[in-house]
Length: 292
Image 1 (cartoon, rainbow, N blue to C red):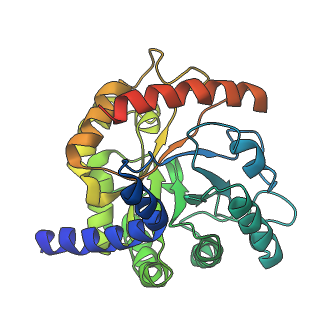
Image 2 (cartoon, rainbow, N blue to C red):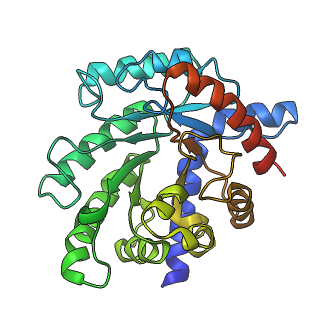
């Protein structure tokens, strides 16, 4: 059963991955060069959430290929179709992708809410129009289930199972980011049992929520078929600076499991200009680590 699940998940993620990078692979093949690294950055990290101008600014950072958007940011936000079209037009204009949509819950809604599915469906629709292949479903602390108690995790599993096929039909993966440890995340994803539900892996969060020792081993525990995307951050420090996560060791583990997806910065900055300068330096570090 587990082997079949891994194979199914692998096929789905490979299919959605091809949709994301097909054009880039064709260009790389004709030029005899490897595909550029899939490095993105959150609009919120750029302090530009809620404005399509974020693509124009992100395009000035060498090495950045995409911007992760916040679903509910801006007035109107990405529940508005005209706004979605405007964002897509700007992304295409500046040659950037939208790897993921975050901030999907409307005010007052969590993954435990009766209206959680509405937020997921609205985000899937926006993601499909933006050619984004992951929606980030976040749930921390009291909103995260107790994975030893079926009455706690059961309703979340049921909701995710119902949302998995609509997501798959749109070429979208529901990426779970939460305060659970790697083993509980693996259990949750496997209980859902659909390749359109995976983990949006954030090692810094693992440490913040008390799972620091498990953060890097968790990469292999989950494996590439359960990890749909990765957040990279080190607070306000550069990724290369000493912090709670040994990033060279983390990138080594990602290479070892064959992960080839997006790395998205969720870094903290005091200004857009500070973000731009730090991201240029972070990109140099990532290239050295990932392409070893």
